[in-house]
Amino acid sequence: MITGTGGGPAKDWSAFQFEIYLNGLTGAVPRLPTDLTRLEEMVARRLGPGPTAYVAGSAGSGTTERANRAALDRWQILPRMLRDVHKRDLTVDVLGRRLPAPLALGPVGVLSILHPDAEIAAVRAAAAQGVPFVASSAASTTLEQIAEAAGDGERWFQLYWPKDREVTLSFLARAKAAGYTALVVTLDTWLLAWRPRDLDQAYLPFLRGVGTANYFADPAFRAGLTKPVEEDLNAAVLHFVQMFADPSKTWDDLAFLRDNWDGPIVLKGILHPDDARRAADGGMDGVIVSNHGGRQVNGSIGAADALPRVVDAVGEQIDVLFDSGIRTGDDIFKALALGARAVLLGRPYAYGLALDGQAGVEHVIRALLAEFELTLALSGYSAPGQLTPEALVDAAR
Image (tube, rainbow, N blue to C red; front, side, top):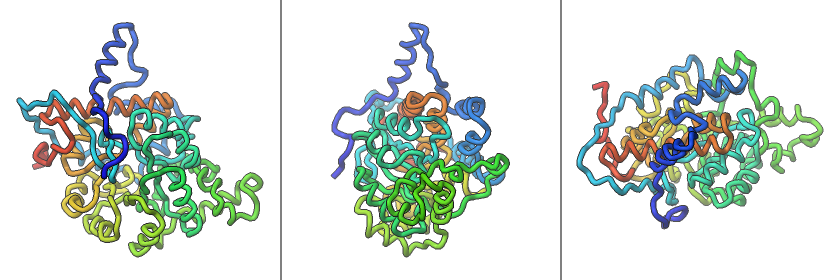
């Protein structure tokens, strides 16, 4: 049974453009650009080099981030004419929930380096627009505070799987008690990649106790300290670093999560179809095709190039979601046409937060989905489920 935000009429996301034009009659223009690709440059002028590099930077020379864009840009939309598109419905069913659009705000950690309202502003924006918010383990705000700010909004919890078994169990119990409906397990960050932009600034927020709120508030984590966090921050940070991730984990360990989480589990960081098959065989409910936005393996395959093979492997069994490189409404169109059920958005919403807090995040959500709806309709489609690879042309062929 599908539950969640469905039940009412489909939202007209495209109406945002007329709202902007009507406001223009009084001389008002948007506070942020409607071309979301301009946000990164604005953030670079607003923030210091450390926070800017941490959010915008990539692994190595940045070839994977560029590959993400090239993989999406290689596909071109092939519009069709004289199809009835006067009624559109962007609602989709994902992980047993009815969502108003095929979009969620993906997990982005340490948001306090971008804006003092951090995750609270971002989750309120997501809830106001009805899209899911994926709370990061590495948040600047506890998962309970994020849940309270979300109200009735759809929220998922992203797990950086700790080495400490008791901390893992505590995180899962806290997330369930706080109303998180899905668990998103990130698999591609067992080790921190070589990130020159961060290294050149010698900037890693966690070593300053930023992005550690969930850990420092956790009873199992605190039980492993000889002194309270408030009395010895350096010792708490060292304990965090030592147990943050566990590169010894294997597919056999998934049974532990399945045994201790009774909702949907999604594996984030899948690029190979065999890994997607193992996820399905292991009782997972979905995968996110992602290379962490190019932040982990330099020289990796572009995420959109990996997507079709993953969909072919498991798309009939489990939900396939997508992130890495989404910047525009037509990017969403392409990802869905290649078989994704929904996309996760990362950097653009973080940039909106940095520039204008909650209002900035809402602007990004509304602009992105308005552009997607208009692209969908102008290409001859009225619902995401109508999209297939036939809506695209591979420009490289």
